[in-house]
Length: 289
Ligand SMILES: O=C[C@H](O)COP(=O)(O)O
Image (cartoon, rainbow, N blue to C red):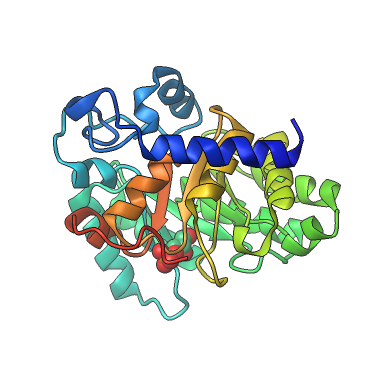
């Protein structure tokens, strides 16, 4: 199937999916019956567990959509002016809401690891962030150090310029250098910065991330203009299949948007508006972009 056909099929799938409700109903651990989600397909859940996203479906029987959504969410604070007090606050919130992880700058990994020790909330950090243009050796060292200080999950940014100029070997090796620098149990997510890519480049980046042995592909840093869109999530899920996770991040601001992303194939949501997403069931724009 060529790229244009693929995009057409995915667009049809997106439209169809928007009209489909989860057949499991209120016992669905992913959505409590409110929307179509990955939890309806046992193979998907097993595959996601295999890549470390064992929180998917872990909330079986929880009838509350907000609480169920929390298990998908990386509670994120990446702004440069974030203080230790704010890191402490998001760690407290992560424990209270049972978010999948806190996603924070590398310099705060040790602090978050101390605060979350003994809980199920993981420590996620970002590498080569937000530009992705640091050298592979620096990214690998940064990831290794973060793991040593307590990070369980590593979200690395690709070299966007290398991808756009056809430097596919470089991009693949850049990702692989990070994957190889951490232990097998540490999850590596690859941030594509989709807003800067065309569809062909998004497809290529997903293929390279998969070849390099990463666990997830992720849309955005939240620093470029543009973030997660439903069609990008559907495209990414389609390209990587069920053996990898897909993380929707950037501009996911409310429950409706988070549900839509999961419906399109996201197995994780990265958001700074996490508490609002879980608490607030009011509808609105499905994405800031
Ligand atoms: O990695 C995740 C993003 O930084 C979150 O972006 P956001 O602040 O738009 O939710």
